[in-house]
Length: 280
Image (cartoon, rainbow, N blue to C red; front, side, top):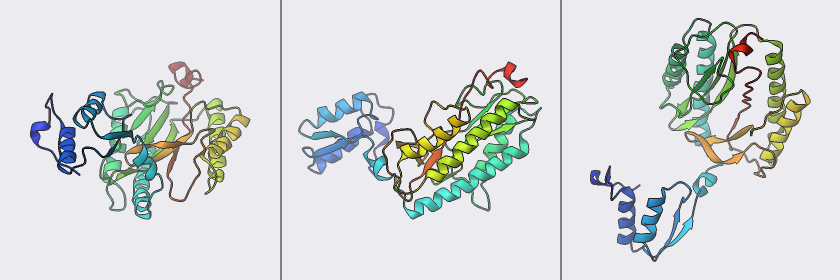
């Protein structure tokens, strides 16, 4: 890790990358090979490296570190299990507080408090970037936060959240029905659950991410439910690790200590995501 002075913060002409480039000059590495994550760096900073290190051989290193850590250490798995225990506690808390007449914001406050408070004496050490509470009539839209609206009888509430331990997460997605779910919602639930079980049964070292996805889609579609997006992706540090996806055709071979969010969200505007749909 390389620190840099406060003078480089908020400076329109220089920033922390200038300190890195200065260090490379000091180390005599100004003509060495240099790996940059070009897909993630702002264009002016890429230009800065090329301009100030004209003799360096710059290679695109995008995603290389993330792929190297797709297989977690046993210590990382232990930390993620702690995060998962907090995740479970937050979902249990959601089941306790979600009810008609409660403001979405008040429900979110109780659930987030559990994520921070933790469980069994193990607190959350941060809050994950993603906490989504999507309630009727907005359940046809993914990845939106709570509002100040009051939860209605018969409403559907979609949650996606995770506990966090030392930067690591173990996310979950769950749907709550504030009342007896209608037949269509129950059928979708049953198809998604069958797909979930099929996907989990397909998970073993040596199989591919694509095969896991195929097991889910094949099973859900046999029960009349189609999901157009991927059904999962690699996770670890602060949620998404943009490497492997649980989608048809992904050739990534599963290995012990890989970690994924098996995410079966299906946003169906015509069925559930409107005021009209609540009364169906």
